[in-house]
Amino acid sequence: MSSPARDDAELVTYQMHVDGKWVDAVSGERFESHDPFTAKPWSLVPRAGAEDVDRAVQAAQRAFTGGEWPRMHPSQRGALLRRLGDLVAENAERLAHIEVRDNGKLISEMAGQLRYIPQWYYYFGGLADKIEGHVVTTDKAAFTFTRHEPLGVCAAISAWNSPLLLATWKLAPALAAGNTVVLKPSEYTSASALEFARLVEQAGFPPGVVNVVTGFGPECGQALVEHPLVRKVAFTGSDRTGEHIYATAARGLKRVSLELGGKSPNIVFADCNMDDAVKGAVSGIFAATGQTCIAGSRLLVQRQIHDQFVERLVAFARSARMGDPMSTETQVGPVTNLPQYEKVLGYIDVAKGEGVQTVLGGGKAERPECGDGWFVEPTIFTGVRNSMRIAQEEVFGPVLSVIPFDDDEEAVAIGNDVAFGLAAGVWTQDIRRALLMSERLQAGTVWVNTYRAVSYQMPFGGFKRSGLGRENGQDAIKEYLQTKSVWISTASEVPNPFVMR
Image 1 (tube, helix red, strand yellow):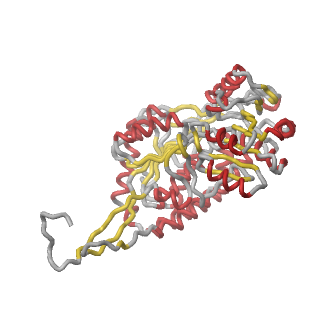
Image 2: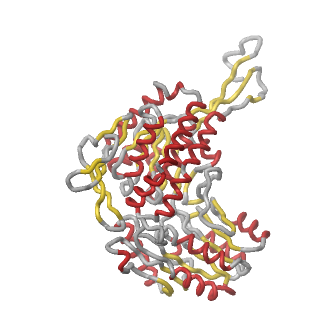
Image 3: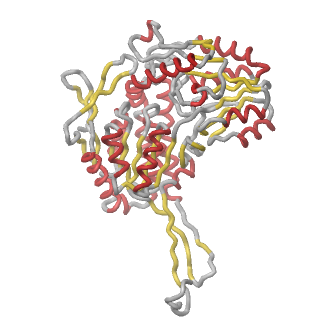
């Protein structure tokens, strides 16, 4: 099926995209995807199992080893990627509405993401024909050089909070490097990936180069990671799932890149621009309903401005408008799925049990404009100690823990005292402090006087339990290449065959 249809129950019914064809799961089973604003199902998605995964991987392997794709010049691959970027740009608004329907994030944010996503396809399309080895001068009588070649079939497993953006971070460099891909979106947000597959087809990619399978982790994701023909797994999600994927992939000696969780410190010094820092703190945790791995969920505030800052922060956050994420007036939307909604409320109860002070929110939202959706009030806790669970474990919801500190040394110590290391924010007008903090904080990204900024040109990834490898920028394409060394002898006679030279 090349476009979604509606069945008798008025649910949009999707098929998977495998080997250039629209197919149902072999079992014929489907599952419902829910609209977080209404808490009601809106679409039906194929429930893939191991046989479906094998069909997709085999198609990707055929496309990698034969047919048009491996014979294409890198410039031709780049042209296809740029064409795909154009198509995403043309369909950005439609895709953004589908993502909001599926994950409940704000239309203003998702539309912004979809309008920006084409830049990844343009950037990596431009890199496709700039993958260059180099001549090496050795101590042997030989002409020696290196080549960088694709890995083969890559599995891309993306998360539900920014479905197409996070998939793009994997697809664009993988395809630019010459690999083929099997994409498995989250079971909570599969629709936009299936709609995206239509654009891949329209752009002219050969069958099997990009395949999309949908289903649950134990039935679909596990089979994909275990498949012997998959040479690389790229995953975005929780650290526990990432740990399992890493162990599973290791048994097949597969390449792995993991973009996992975070418990990022957003550090506010007394010399900050307070208006900017308040906005940065709110943006860091509430703009995406806290459903982002880079959420600034630990707000470290220098003690001498702590009370004043918290007062201004609470007043500003209290004004946030909740409601329909399709409305451009809404500033805080629902939590994406019911299990996550229950998890967030559970962490709020844990924090209260640990003795924090609730200065804003602290429970489910019961405002009329929230209807029956999965809404949690923007929540701010003070009196938080960094040893508390609410400060150590990723909540992935609109919950902010405020922690006071006295000086730079304590800020660094608290900031680094977690298992994660994905991101950090620093708010200061002192350039020396900014540079030293960016050096000493154990995080893959450090923002100074801004937060949540990303670019297709800038590497992104984590330290510690926040992951392995890098996405975006030139570092990303290296994750999908392997180096080959080539020796061409220039010796006047054949060396002694019994001696390594």
